Image (cartoon, rainbow, N blue to C red; front, side, top):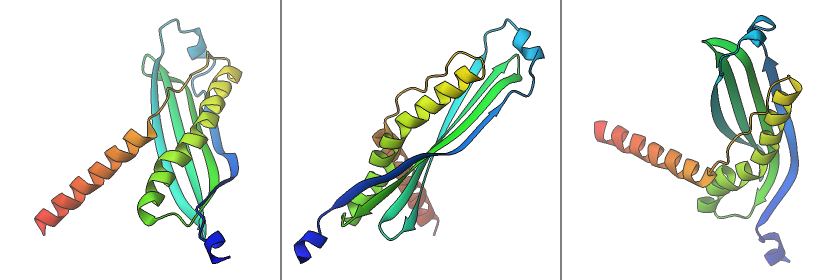
Length: 154
C-alpha cells in the first residue's frame, strides 16, 4: 500500500479564464483610420502553490494594438489551471510547473484572445506557438547568472 502512495501524480483539476479585459479607448474615431496597426504582444507566466501538492499556473497575454501611436485596442487575458502534482522529485517539479503546465493552459489563452478580438470587431490576433521549455531554460540561465553576479559581489 505504501508503494501506491508514492506513485507520481499529475492531474489537471481545472482550466479557467481568470481575468479578461478589453479596452478601445479611442473608439469610434480611431476606427476610421486607414493606417496599418502595430501589434505588440507580451506574455507573462505565474505559478503559486494553492495547497499541498496543488498549484495554480497562469499565463497572461497582453495585446496592445496602436495606429499612429494611439491605442486601437488593448486585450489582456489571464488563463489559469489548477494542477495536482505529487510525489515528483524536487528537481523535476519546477520544469513541470514551468513547461508542462503552461503548455496545457496556453491553447485556451490563444483561443480566448482570438475570440475577443473578433467579438470586438477586429481581425483575430492569433498568438504564435510558444516554446515554454526554451523560455524556462532562458529564465533559469538568467537567474543563475544573477546569482553568480551577486556571489561575485559578495
